[in-house]
Length: 248
Ligand SMILES: Nc1ncnc2c1ncn2[C@@H]1O[C@H](COP(=O)(O)OP(=O)(O)OP(=O)(O)O)[C@@H](O)[C@H]1O
Ligand SMILES: [Mg+2]
Image 1 (cartoon, protein in one colour):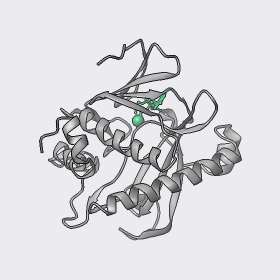
Image 2 (cartoon, rainbow, N blue to C red):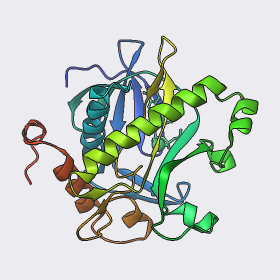
Image 3 (cartoon, rainbow, N blue to C red):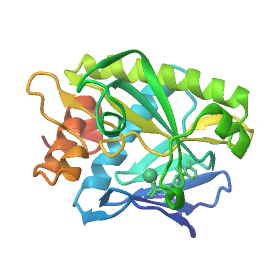
Image 4 (cartoon, rainbow, N blue to C red):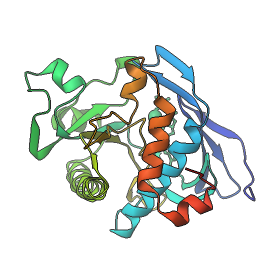
């Protein structure tokens, strides 16, 4: 890799963020650590970082093509993503097309109930407070974003949902929900950061109803890495597969 990995800026639960010689760029290492339940359940899963990085890169490129500003610059090698350095906004922006997961535990929705329009939920990304759900007034009072920022985040998020949902449905995948994070670049633009992967999305096979995401790990089921590999196989085109030497 012809990118000089500088000092470690931040080590999260699943990724490391390194400085580079360019102060406006960071190198994100996607690690093989997999966690669930506020980090209580923890394991190392070989090749997870590899798959998550190529899956995220594919989604970021797809979103750039429809005019969404993303952190993505390059994938110098699988596992490492060169990104625009962002000042992260501590919001977990969750979009729900279908009722699943924590929404069913917290509210009397029907399992599999569909949402038109989709639900956008914002949680406070703060482990100490266990990522509580926010509303606009709390976000404004905490000074996390302005009303204009929130409206912009909402519009970009709906566009991301439309783009990814159509792309995935065309390939036989149901897209129940996903979580994204935004940050501000040097010019103050709101930019999509972090990752879009089976760690942060739900993907279900429409034909077999197989779960192809981190829910397998949450439930202690087998075939986690095979599911991530399957998502990569479904979304990458032949050129990508050749480039990343994927031999399916
Ligand atoms: N482009 C970017 N520039 C700077 N930081 C970023 C960028 N994209 C993501 N991040 C931050 O880098 C970290 C990624 O690591 P990871 O996902 O492992 O962390 P996490 O465990 O989810 O979060 P945390 O430890 O912050 O609670 C997150 O804090 C994320 O907000
Ligand atoms: Mg994270």
